[in-house]
Length: 445
Ligand code: AMP
Image (cartoon, rainbow, N blue to C red; front, side, top):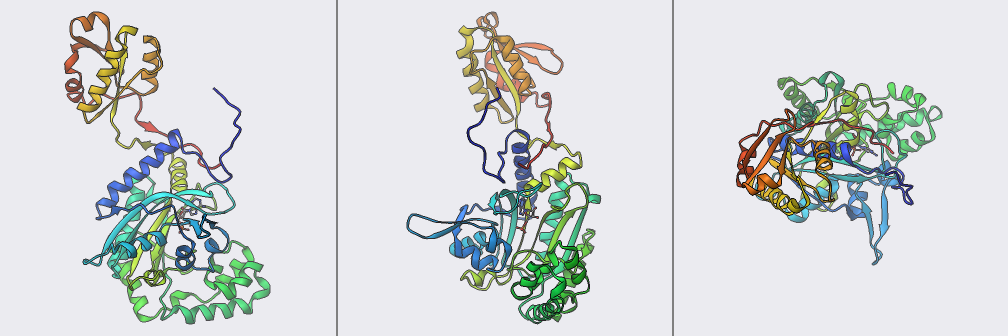
């Protein structure tokens, strides 16, 4: 029934319903499967944190902190912010709860909504969903390579075609080598100030590395011949980078060294990486990425603890799966049977049988009518729900202590004992519903 809504979802937000909600479930389910094989556990942090957590963590000169945060005062006048990303919150939680503990290692993953006040477009929203992982404690190149391989494995497991993805890798250096390079780059930008857009002119003083991300063609021309950090790395950073890429090569994953890859948040040190989709997404082609953040614990008041992580964007991944005509298989949920009452007097029996099925089988969902429908309408509802089996509770059969099991694919029927329905269903795991596939529709408002 079409309605004329009084209220609309706020600009840059969408409701996840139907296929898009199932796609979110599919990404979560696959994340739990893939990440647990690397030893990761789920963490859920609050959706808002003290504003300082992000301002100090992400960096005051970043676009995210400068322009995009949803900050507000609570009733006691404290400044809080809806999380624009989850790494700072996870690190805050790790410090507070000493999550790395005696072992000096915590492997955590998260999934949930993030908030940035950006101009909405395809693949870019104000409330968007990320899945990410953080390895807190290890400083080794193996930790970096494992993180990159886990992200790659995740995208492959989802069903994204390898030929349409590109893995970019770079090093952002460390406090030993980056400051001198930063000044060198700033001087270069100041020498070319007339050719730069107003924003990059400011970046020369505030955040020169971010100029590499500018989409302005004139700025890109200037940046093409700018000094590169890859040529200015200290020996330790250069050696770290060589070991990371050697491990990727040993694992047989192709990557592209990209000396201009600078990710938008200030906390990165050494390895940064991004997986891009080659076509189908236009400008918003970064499916996910991340990097090492060895200074973040200290910036948030913790003991020096290295860390590395990534975050991927649900909307872009779902659009990429859609563009690749990749159907998403359901998250392996239970098969559906529909318990239909042949006449009104048996509605209570059908209702009770559905509950028995739900509590005594693992693999089957049971539905029954809640709207006083005729038998014909119950069959329609069973079809709509993709039921593999309809259990018909009819008067004569019930008298005889039986029900009729109808296979919805073959339409074959079988009479079995009323008390034996759950066992019968468990003995027939091969039965298929109408469709276990779903396709992804549009995700942007
Ligand atoms: P970031 O946290 O900026 O490193 O972004 C990590 C990933 O999150 C990106 O590669 C995108 O896939 C996704 N992402 C970031 N911002 C948005 C947004 N406003 N809307 C949708 N996805 C986003």
